[in-house]
Length: 262
Ligand code: NAD
Image: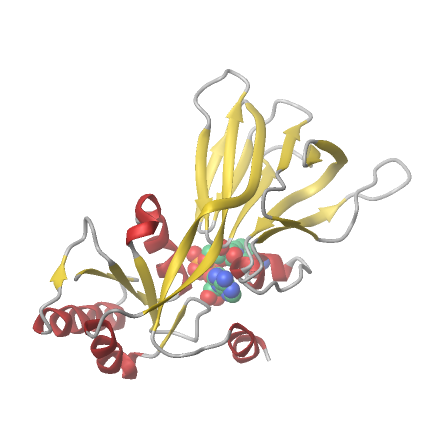
């Protein structure tokens, strides 16, 4: 089996990365950065987000597992002391795969440049580079509201415990193939009105954000930030692709939520 090990880049993560790499090679696994079947991320959730984006084009052939060298991560749930055990599990393939839903983001431009397509594991956020964000929001082809405020956050179920949670969004179990739309400080008064609470959309329901004016937008996809100009629309929905996590022992989602937050 072909593998890659990705480090956050700090000393502790680099040392552990070298150890995991040589253990796996001793078991006869092949180090391959181009086409790994399993990617071991060593660092934190951010390291796993980076690994996901590196291999987002071959999710059908790649599984992920995360080791945390800092505090317990949502995606990085193995401890450094457990890596020998983890390596033995990996070497004894086949292992169990758990799939989580992803967010698909399509950005279309007014000058009809090619549509840009992205996937997010946690969320996509949209903010204006100038003043309030003003966007018409369509859900399933129907005008829903005109949003005015700081920004919008569209998250996956596994991302619902990240930025979405800080915005008062609900925590969704990753078995619910859905996306959540959460507001960032919407303006609500006698003139402007938004729903004011997070909205959860099922699979196949698209949400379309249409700018009211030609300003530049800051669009984030997990840890990545883009500046988007001449935006005609930003479309989000549950992606056809899923991320595959290699699971070697049960660690139920609600247990992870409890251990991370309570
Ligand atoms: P970072 O270094 O700023 O870390 C963000 C924190 O979010 C870390 O503690 C990380 O462990 C945690 N995190 C990441 N994914 C999570 C998840 N699915 N559930 C629970 N916690 C999670 O940035 P980073 O490590 O590059 O991660 C980028 C993420 O940061 C974004 O995807 C976004 O969700 C999050 N973020 C949160 C806020 C906020 O809560 N106000 C603001 C900006 C970004």
